[in-house]
Length: 454
Ligand code: HEM
Image (tube, rainbow, N blue to C red; front, side, top):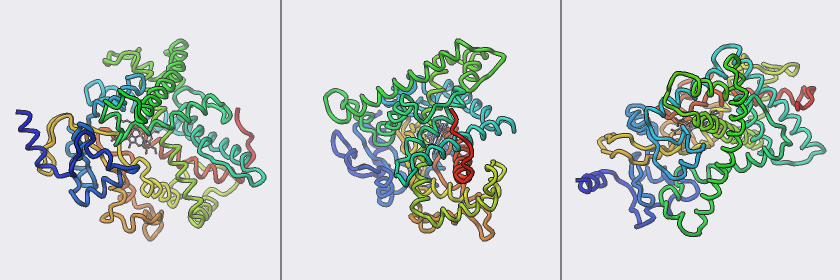
């Protein structure tokens, strides 16, 4: 019987004592990934916590995570049926949907669209690169304007607009000016997305919190509103695309997705999935990249000697008379190392989007029932002293060998895009974006010739 099965399962998984009603919710704190890592020291890398009425399995460390997401890839590829997930992308999100045949088709379409517009051939690669470099040049102009006469400013808005513009250009063939107030306001609101979705989101594990006034309900209301607003913005653009659709000319990703979902052979996805897909891509593509760019700026300021070393390498390889291209990447190993170290050190997506088990599964001799929520602690992989010397020290050189060559085995050990069937589908474009932004900004600050684009 279910009760006996659950009892047996509970006995097998270690974990902290769970209080009635709230479980361990009050123990997670502001940084659940740190709490999870501390708990791993006590209970091992696979343990169980309880949040509200959900038993949740927490996976820490490379071995346990690989065992689950690679060796049992399908069994761990689900998403929980959380209430907040239904508010995303008009209810037709690929990211926040459970594993199914339909999800597989949806993901394949999103993935091949990204590839077609970023890396399919040398022409698309070049066009994509040009978008990014154009954005970087604009950004420098805005930074120069805002810092004129030695003034201080907070660059986070500008970085958010720049990252959003790159993905909007791909999706809609359109970018927005840095002074476009409506766009900026929308992005500021969308940046609050992470407050609700993610490990420890209380409304998901205690849905009854929605039924009376309290701060969690307010955050959730806000979350629903910002999702509705963002979805309406995207839907409006998709409708315009639908109305002007020409099968002979694929202008951008929206056209490509319309073409496959609405005009391709039957794939089981209704036309509402077009809006869902585009919203997913823009949502996932701007917040993450802009956060990475913000961390990069912060670390450049904090470690001026590293900044100087980077500038020196860029000056040597690219010089100050031209803009850098992706071709330069192979000669800029320290820059690559710097980006990987930023991702490792900050682990700014410390816990992946929650997973769930699609069927009963046994790992490490521990039986986990179907539909169990699973948290994956990427931070623990990137800060494991077994794998990284002085993990709490920021040191890009750890990724270079004695000849200054990038150690690919080590870079692939950084876990920030997750692994397995739910692995991020934008990892390549994110890396290209960041790689092009950085040296373009540094070089163009000295070129300064180009006037801002409209
Ligand atoms: C999923 C990280 C940029 C599209 C994810 C996940 C992580 C992640 C951790 C969750 C994986 C899981 O649940 O196991 C990042 C980071 C980025 C980045 C660190 C930038 C540095 C992008 C970009 C795009 C994108 C630029 C697209 C334009 C997606 C999508 C998913 C996803 C669609 C959902 C995949 C699924 O559920 O099957 N990303 N991402 N991401 N990402 Fe990214």
